[in-house]
Every structure is written in C-alpha cells, then in structure tokens.
Amino acid sequence: MSHARLVLASTSAYRGGLLARLGLDFEALAPELDESPRAGEPPAELAVRLAAGKADAVAARCPAGTWVLGSDQVADLAGRPLGKSGDRAGAIGQLRAMSGARVDFHTAVALRQAGGGLAQALDTTTVLLRTLSDAEIGRYVDAERPFDCAGSFKVEGLGISLFEAVEGRDPTALVGLPLIATAALLRQAGFAVP
Image (cartoon, rainbow, N blue to C red; front, side, top):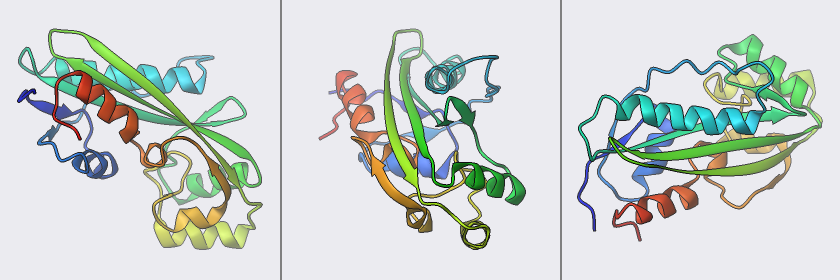
C-alpha cells in the first residue's frame, strides 16, 4: 500500500473534516483557482471542471508523485448554478429561490498525481426543500450563518430541518466531499483505506 504524500486541494473545514474520517494523513493547501462558471456551462460540468482544476492547481506546486485531491460542489436549481451566498442577503435570496423546489447538488472529486494521471467521480444528491416562510428562512440564516455553503444551508446541522426529502447514494456528498467515491479513488491509487 502507498505511503505517498496526500494533499487536499482545499482549506474548507467541511472537506478536511470529512477526509479525516478516512484515517489518512494529509495536508491541506488552498488551490487559488477562479471558480467562475463559463457562459452556458451546466452545473454538473462546472463541478467536475472545478474539482479537476483545484487538484491540478495544487499538483503543479507539489513534487512528482504527490497525490492531490480536489473537490467542488455546485447546486443546480433548474439548470442554474448556485454557489456560496457569501452573506446574509445572498443566503436569504438563495433559500427563497429554492423554497418548495427540487435542487440537485453535484459534488465532484478529482485525484491527481503530480506529474501523472487524473481520476474523477461525480455524485449527485437531490434535495426537496419544504415551502419556507421568510420568517423561517431568516431564523435559519441567523442561526447557522451558512454563507460559505453552496445552497446556503448546512445539512449536517440545522439545515436538515429545511428539507422534505434527500435522495442520493452518499450522504457525505451533500456536506462537500463524497467519501464513497473518494475512498474508491484512494484505494485505486494504493492508499490503505478500509
């Protein structure tokens, strides 16, 4: 099994916490990548491109043989990508737009070996939000301040109360890193993941 260096191309506490659950030693580096969508780019393609771009950006700064894991999540509201809201007004706007709607969350993961190949996976989780009142949205946003989350909620916290249903194959994908796919990619690369 591999004793290679593993780097997470993210400084997200959410992704770091999820990757730590696999019991591997890793370090986290910021990818410094423009995450702007391209004109007409579908949300799933955006997530895949950004996950690979993050892995590539960090791998370019690492010695050959280093494994770099990049991930990105894009919320898809009727074909329109939703990113991180950034502030209270943005979060309220996103949650109003998603109220009573089905939203797909595309979470991509890319594993790049510096100087070598790339392996990727994509997980899509569908969330059905309840019809939310402005008062409910305001209370939620003030309680969790989900400004750094795609879709403006934290499923692992109080955000779960906003939903009627969640449909998907990997519950960790909605938090920001699909561990089922990530573990499979890491095993294929030779890492000792149970």
